[in-house]
Image (cartoon, rainbow, N blue to C red; front, side, top):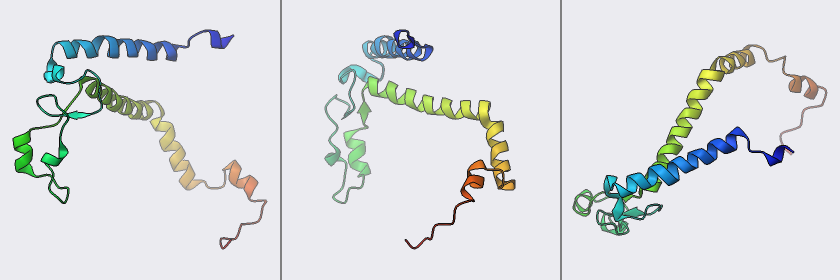
Length: 139
């Protein structure tokens, strides 16, 4: 019966999708922030300042290094607003994950780390495995 109802996680993910994809992204696109209307609203391709696909061969040397003069003439790389927002939220999510782990579990992690360095005999797995002979390394 539990599969009939949505969990808070499902609702949170769906609400986030609605806010980001159906509200924030179109607002930024139609207000033409970052010249976003020159590109598709959602794309993983790189574009030039005119909205065409970015031609990497125009800025690379034959040994695949960036020619700074050619780059300054051709211009910077532009990416679509959907890609900018999704990448931004991915970085924010990773940062939030790290901060959450440090704030909520940091003390426990540090305690377990110090306990593992000072007390090597209290690991139940090591105690159970000590009854078996060591495996030779040459096989």
